[in-house]
Image (cartoon, rainbow, N blue to C red):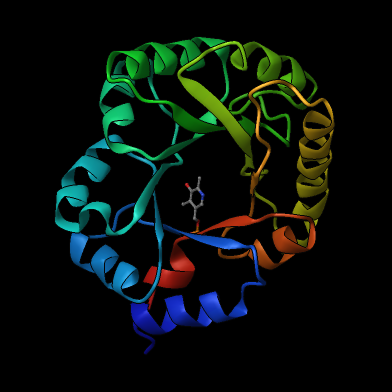
Length: 217
Ligand SMILES: *Cc1c(COP(=O)(O)O)cnc(C)c1O
């Protein structure tokens, strides 16, 4: 049986320079997350605000907190108070709410734009062809700062089948970067999970989100 510590350290050793680990804590206890942080996981990803609120007081600022779930407008006020990065911005409406709530607490929130790289109607994320326009619109807001892109990609049977969706997102990343939109700093490309992070890194990811590979023992 591997411990959480073993898993984190093995993954950290494997990641190439410049690639950061997001340890995905959904459904995990504060004790489990604490073990991951103690082993060197510097960023925790949370999908649900309630879970983040429950575990964060026990971990605090030893780690950065990335919100990686679908963020409802009525949860934005709480989210901006506890998150260091919101990875899942996919509409101007959501961006405006984040901007408004951040203005009230004098904060500038780094965000990633989530791309619906599989163009799946029922999934979150902006459609790829609308990403550049959304980035240009969000760039006009003062209390939110675009730091890059994030994608999940569709569920595929064969892990290798995810590659085209990562490639699509990487091309968009380069396209938006080349647009040199004032205020937009394209530093982060968040792609890949436990079963796909090696492929994602080959396709340019520098932020990988791993849950089961750390916490399943
Ligand atoms: C759960 C989740 C992950 C991690 O998935 P694993 O397969 O457990 O590694 C990554 N990103 C998001 C958005 C998730 O919801």
